[in-house]
Length: 158
Image 1 (cartoon, rainbow, N blue to C red):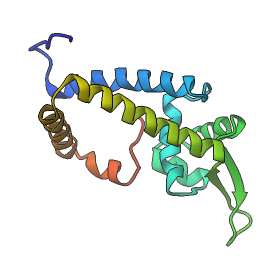
Image 2 (tube, rainbow, N blue to C red):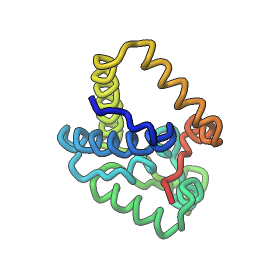
Image 3 (cartoon, one colour):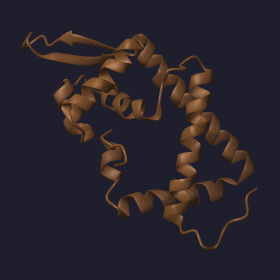
């Protein structure tokens, strides 16, 4: 186990751990049959799990330009994770939706996160795991990030 550096505060440890965990999770997701995915694609997936936005709505939600959102949607469409369809109420409007492959990628990502949490639970006791979860949740609340998690609207780091 890595020795804790007393100079690292909780926020810094959370950031470094989160970045390292993202890389491990991405590698496992790729190994499980989704080799073309990138971390940035996860932000798009989050918007498509419970919704079917237009590219403009996706851009607004991500806090990026419409061109950047269109590029991300096109990448995911080319990889087979996203489809476009005409809105039933207004055929001029095009919406984005996860394909079966996209839904599978979400399921794989959830499974590998659960597996990693299980691995962590084997290295620390349940009380420490619960305390870490409470501390990180409190930190997220303190900096105003909890609502974006609840609404699946976390934005990529700028």
